[in-house]
View 1 (tube, rainbow, N blue to C red):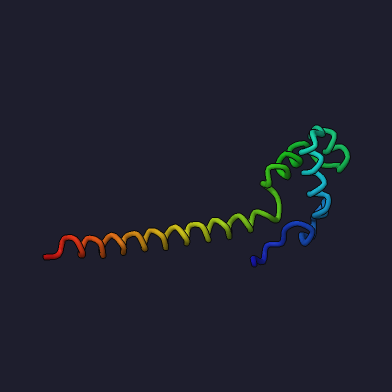
View 2 (view 1 turned 180 degrees about the horizontal axis):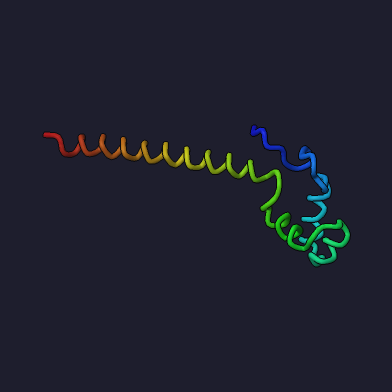
Length: 94
């Protein structure tokens, strides 16, 4: 966990985590960004960023997920290289 505070934990937060989820739900239901922005007293630009998950506490989760996926693929790659070397030795050795 980083020391960088995001979401409700940030001292200058203007929206609660519940507000963020409500914004996403309204946008998915087809409510225009301008209407959502007026209701929550934020800009349309910020509504768009929230709906695209560009400005949320999920950013850190995506970084962790990316690390796990990269680590997994590195392990799989190493496993295939080892398997290839074993097969090569089995079929090529005299």
